[in-house]
Amino acid sequence: MQTQWRFMAVDLGASGGKCFAGELLDGEFSLRELHRFDHECVSFAISDREGTATERMYWDDTLIYANILQGLQAARREIGPRLDGIGIDTWGADGALISADGDMLGKVYAYRDHRLDRMSDRVRDRLPAERIYGITGIHFQPFNVSNQLLWLTENRPQLLKLVHRFLPAPTLFYYFLGGITVVDSTWASVTQLMDAHTRHWSAEILAALDIPAAIMPEIVPPGTRVGQLNQLITERVGLDSPPDLLTVGGHDTASAFAAAPVRDPLRALIISSGTWSLVGRLVPEPVTTPAAMAANLSNEGGIGNVRLLKNCMGGWLAHELRRIWRAQDGQEMAWDEMYRQAQAAPAFTALIDPDDQSFYNPADMEQALLEYCRRTGQTAPQGRGGLLRMVYESLALKYRRISADLAESCGEPPATVHIVGGGARNEMLNQFTANALNLPVEAGPIEATAIGNLMVQAVGAGAVQDLSQIIPAVRQAFPVVVCRPQPDQIAAWQAAYDRFQTICG
Image (cartoon, rainbow, N blue to C red; front, side, top):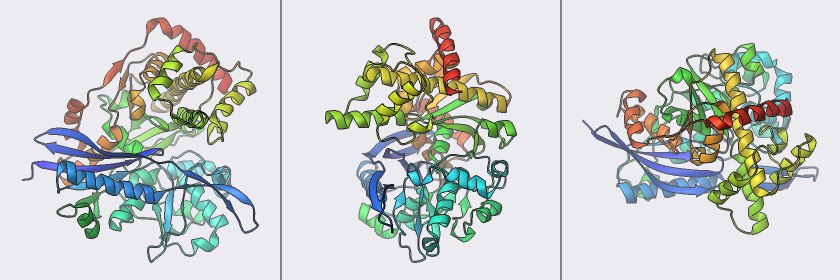
């Protein structure tokens, strides 16, 4: 019987990618970073048939694929010529179109492209919002794949005739590695096209949006062996034999939630903190009540459960400020310096709704924040530290508001907050969150998405029977940092929350 298992997790976020090796040996789990790279969507100015130039935002899928190959080469160098499996998770939107001959039909649009700004309304014109939510359990966001494919049917019907298959973001890279054209249920669940109860594409919604059912990929469960690494690629990266390609929680949030060291799933608030903050609770079945719909809660497919959650703008706000300041200064401001300046700034000078539409994809995030303060009659904070503190305080208050909506749908409030992902490094935001919700915060693991990815691969490959068998090893390998509410700060945070509720409406 095999006792040592080696897997590679490819974790692709909206601002960077990482490749990790995970090893399971005699009940112990270890993680090693193999390769890390930056990527971001690129803005083009492209003229249409009438000569009108508009901004179009695309992903550089070739760059991402080349870096996955570098990750495989690093695996060969650092852990040896044998891998048992490869799993890929990505952000929860976007995809590619291919012909029957495997040709890419255009670039991969990024979800912040402005062509989608009003497409949610167009989807609702085709089918009542209540019906869509009742089927899918997914709330209306500009980036939903339902919007993206409806835009295609309405604006590129001639291109649609050439499409053989739509490849969701994780599927695209499985396709590059081994010709795979299926998608796992966690990623399919967030498209607003999958029936949350049957876990199949909704024929009713596809028909209403004029999306040909034949172009949609087959939906399979996480942990499914779907093929092997192409032999030619195997030889080029120096592996002895082709490793299996295994579906995981293809939506990165599903993988992150799987790795959260939760002791009482029914009383835990989980925040996957990165470019987006995904704030949610684990529930056994989809919650598609009118109250859940009114609160804009989404039922995303989990691994043995459902993630009832809400998307919050998250680290995007600070990342965009950092990008603007990089252009101004000619160099990148270190995150530690950003946190230091934020900590030194006065508290609660002004507050924002992180999910205000003006912050979704502005040309200049700093000006967008200042304009929001003017629009809401607030005195704008001074300096870069003041802007950052406003962002982080507002995020913590938004978490509290979302938690209240979730508690109403779940029937009881949470007892603990778990913050996983890269944002778990932000000790200041962790403390703000503990104070805002008056609950203990357990921060970590930081690489929860990659860990969850590897955990599901271990189940799919037969290394363990289910996730419960590997969770103790993960807890042992990645202890959390506990942050408790500060009693002398609770009154100030309550007053700030009252202001936040008034400002945000």
